Length: 79
Image (cartoon, rainbow, N blue to C red; front, side):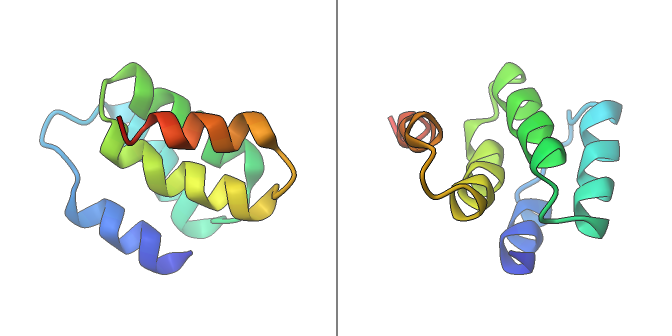
């Protein structure tokens, strides 16, 4: 999980919102927090940064392996 967060940091865009930066910092402290991962993924998708949403969605898929809708959403990020 920490590797995904590190990759996310390297791919960060200059136009990242303050809210997203704050969520990212919270995720560094609590990488297994379902709510933070969901909020972060949703915000990235809202900002049209699908590549940044993928690591959060992957963490959620690991934490919730039976969530089929989550896996569908993750798959949609690769279109």
